[in-house]
Image (tube, rainbow, N blue to C red; front, side):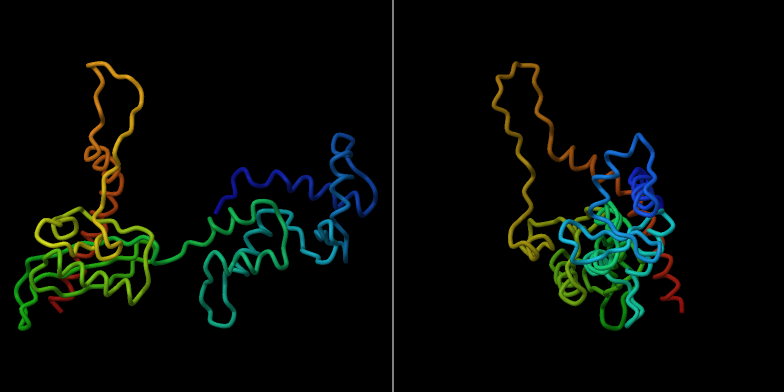
Amino acid sequence: MEFSGRNEKFVLYAAVRQYLVDGLVDAALKKKVSRMAANFVIRESKLFYTGPSAQFMRLVVLSDEQKRAVLEECHNNPGTGNHGGVRATMDRVVVGYYWDYIKADVTDWVKEPWEVVGMDLIGPLKKTMKDHQYVLTVTDLFTKWVIAEPLKCGSSTEVAEALVSKLYTFGMVRKIVTDRGRAFVNERSTKYSPYFLMYNRHPRLPQALNVCETDAAFELADPEEELELKLAGVKALNETVCSELCGWGGAKMAA
């Protein structure tokens, strides 16, 4: 991982350390370094940040290599072997270490699973003994972990019930990517679309508000077209995931 544009303070931290060790500092940095030095101390040749209160000492990170080592150390949970989320990692970092842009770096470093999922309906397939002929797949796009749920008719009601069950089991997600097929967006025959069950209302497209005078040549953008353009950006990724899932599902059925 690169920390582009976030290491400009390393030079100042190094200058502060040198100033506290032997009093030497570049003339161009002297004013800034002498002002910063009041919030730092040297212990065993290492630079620590104390802040104005001087109640706690946090080791100052002086390079990208040190930063990566700290993030890897704080992201891992030594008790379970699992990786912590943004908040847990952030808590561990700020207890013992100091550098600028800690929050941004932790957020970029920690890629949490089950935030964005891709959802697809495969079928109709050959009916099973329990009359299932569709498979609803929900894929965590970070870990590529797949949940497969057999369905009988693939209706929006059946899809919604299966999806909500999985969200109750594994937790809410931040975003669901679909191909906007009828099973995912149809709401004419039933109120129980996935969106309705999650938010207790139907989705509303944004309405344009224009308080300026317009002439005959003025055209109002179509919200449906705007939505289609935005969804096109994720369509390629969704198709890749779906094709992998179809291959996986076919192999499982053949087995």
